[in-house]
Length: 256
Image (cartoon, rainbow, N blue to C red; front, top):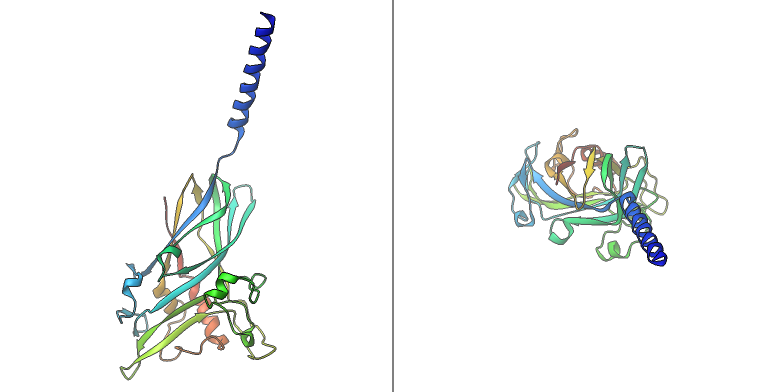
């Protein structure tokens, strides 16, 4: 009888400890993002490509034939001030629906975060020439004469110029460079952080990020495609204008 009582006591103690352990565990979740794209509040998909149907704030009529961009260094700031960095990146390509969602490999604690942010493009430290095989395969590289590394964004299409003739434009964002050649110089950083604000994460929360494409052309610089249309990568002034206009492009659409 004593042996039975001892066994029962040990069993209860064991399960009691296991229960306490489970109660003290902090639930975690992956971070899930979806990307949507709009022009003046109208959804844009790859079905809208190659047709002149958009008008920017300057009045240029234009089409979109390609839109892809890179985000990296997702960070979550907890109420304690702790910053959790997800050292991952993703290339969003409007032509490929499979790239319009992204799930982090790293799990984070469920709960409230005072700030969720990401980098548009790569920081200078991460923008290492030839370092990412998938981006190399995507022809995402920047020529060595402009400092190497990778694009931040490629937006291509056609516009009607002042003569009413369809012409091509290539709105490509990279690290701004002067003096193209073996020793380029960099007047200022043109990657930037996007702050989505405070977000509460539950299990499998879906964070939807909206890209307002029209904002690339209007705020604060009113973009005339007759002035800036092609050969913008070696034009540091144009790159800095893209940086300025990019501050208003990404916004939090929803958290579900």
